[in-house]
Length: 149
Image (cartoon, rainbow, N blue to C red; front, side, top):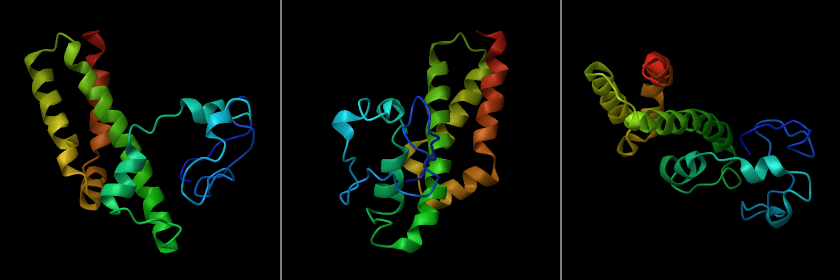
């Protein structure tokens, strides 16, 4: 529902962001999942939202559906975009564990991981993350590690 995709080698059709895929069933499952590649959707087969979709629907919106509550569609899409970025940063910052970090880098890593912690996920968390530019701060931290790699 949330992501857009353009017709090309990964997707057989154009789909604007915010509109459901024509292959999305009433049960929110893909009706062509077993034939994604054969039907021209290898991009769907390889896409990983890193759990952002489940976090938004199950935790932030307590299992409510945009189909049953159309007024939730826009807030859910916005939350998904933010949560996808958060999940991406959580994974990337976590992966820095294997690097030989300086003490300052290790302290910053621990601070960022605490801010990204799953126990904090809520609609208010997403607002605070945006207000404090959490994703931007994670990107800055990751860029600062170029000398470590």
